[in-house]
Image 1 (cartoon, rainbow, N blue to C red):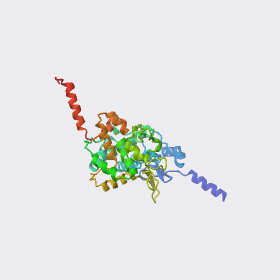
Image 2: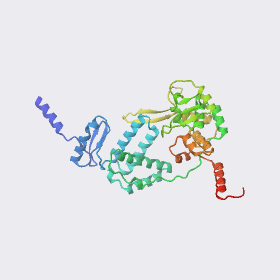
Image 3: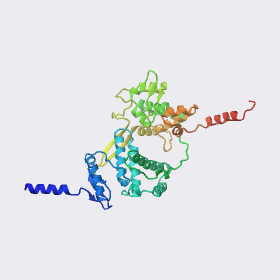
Image 4: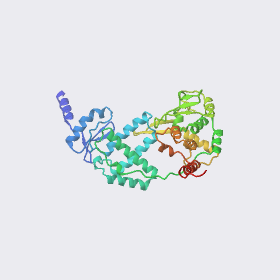
Length: 373
């Protein structure tokens, strides 16, 4: 009996651990995920044995610098890395879902078992043409950006020696359209119909160019009420912002009760912007970005009777702040206010500053064509 058990164990241990997939690649399902190791039996076995210790413990897969990696495997690796950023609150759940959807489109177009070394310039150009037929310029650029970011990550982290010629496709040029800002009449109505918390957040949006996440992450330690200042680096860029607070902003914040380290909490005691982790019946995980500020602000707009066009929301306060700040004539101050790394990004928030442009043009004439005046 004991000899039979030993014999069976020996037979099982001698069994080839990988399965031949219909695509021709040798694979193995580990912890619910299917991993591919190539078409050559010996090389596939060697790769599996080198990576088995990492895979079976749930750690990130270690891959030699091989360009024969399947596209699906690369996408899974990249999304696994991005998911950890979501868990660490270094990436929004909304952008993570955009990445999942975008890379799903990419793998569907090229084939999930397509090997990286097989992806040519023409394939990428055809992918861009496919996107142009289905999506707006903004969405096309988002999908192209996500694809490029994945390949840059693979090269930077030694997952791949070489990556496809992603520089062969450029983002679509977008003609900037003027977007709405709030006029003083609208701002007064918003402040009149809002409660203390929303009023304070509106003032921070106008005073400091704060967005939803800025308000949700603001802590009492970030505020210096006595000196009317707020010191809050922008989480997206890490750029520091030490800004002066209006007296209206200080007075409104001073009326808020201290319920924790954060300045703002919902009625249920939750942060106003948070990431919720949902586990489906099949075990898959989906992260949802719950933005209570945007929802409450939309209700407030309806309550005030302000006729808002599509796209107008809490973030319009930030755009309004940037536009008014730009009229001061100091673009670097606008950049600092918005927490941007460069002036180029700051200009996308600034809307109508035609009056200041006229002044600049008039001043140019005085310098270029001197006259008696």
